Image (cartoon, rainbow, N blue to C red):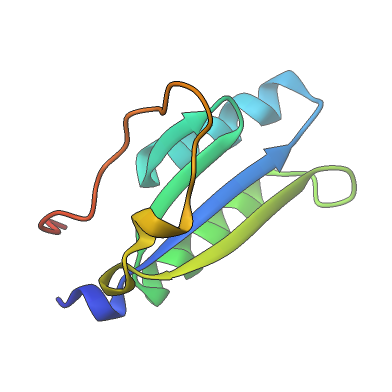
Length: 100
């Protein structure tokens, strides 16, 4: 696997129902790193992102819930440079070796 095929995604959600919000958070924790309460970073190839979207569709109520998926680009283009934190930055998986 090359870093060119893996993109970094920023995923944020807005879900008011506690049980659904918990299920979405657990799902995203299994795919990536939580960087804020409802914001995650996920490094994924296209197939992994498709699986994640399918799981999110199952656990969300698409009539009232919302998830934002932002493609930050390939890891090989320096995903770290596209993000800036003000204050103490959270810990998350860097662009090191990919083991899947």
